[in-house]
Length: 396
Image (cartoon, rainbow, N blue to C red; front, side):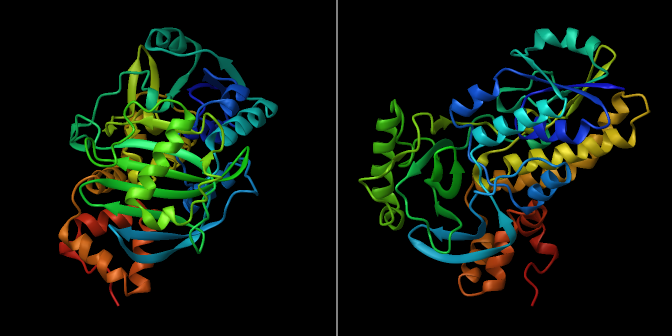
């Protein structure tokens, strides 16, 4: 049986392990044990939209029945509530600490090997001789391999947002319960996401702050209590509707590791390279890293993982050489371009025709639903942003 080494145990690596384990000999190379993941720092925010949930069901990944059933997205521009749009089907948000730890334990029971240790570029020679194929799913901390940057899809050289994330108790959900997005032009965005954690239900408050702007107010904040105090003051000052749903006596992080301060420079890399005679493929954030403002990180990783699996399965008996990487990239590139261009556009001033669509949706439920569907299918968002001159976006 052909051997595959997967670097990383995040969204892409774990879905690939489930997908590949029945057809290949799979080893996951990781630097944290399940217990360390479960008790560690939150990784990110996450919303798994319906296409991702369907992909996970197809490879029989474990689910969590306690996760909130998210059916709507509320959209606010500045201080004005514009609309509530309906998703085509439910979405869920499960603390990745639970999800990743549960999946690692389940895969180990299913016979997938886990090799503990941090992998660096200096390990690639040994990995290339140990496996028939190596998959770099090392996430935002990667890549381990030297995948070349795709300059056409990488216009920025610095982060466009500071990312400030906390999982909180004491926030009454918006009604109907769903995701809430507030865009503050020139300043940033606030996302509110119901989630399930090891400590029960929580509300994720996620600020995307324009560097140097009014929401970029967490520099020097250290420790969970100081973080929660600063978040409450920012919400009270800039997001009064959310502040009205906070019980200040109960408002606190759900655990001391339930917050994150980070920033990413959106970068897309060509996801294949030969190392000696061994093909290395990239998947997820290690090669397709987008700003999190459109919620596509885990969903893009899931999409790419399925495309990679289907490529390998179609060539299970062929030579795994650069032609396999070329086919994988040609399969994924249109989707990656759609996600990347849409997400990058959302970090800049909104185009005039998009602002008009948002205002139209305030009085048109069908238009509101179509905008919300962008998050389930980024190719629709891409067409709305970049192909509007050649088509009628919202035909009657």
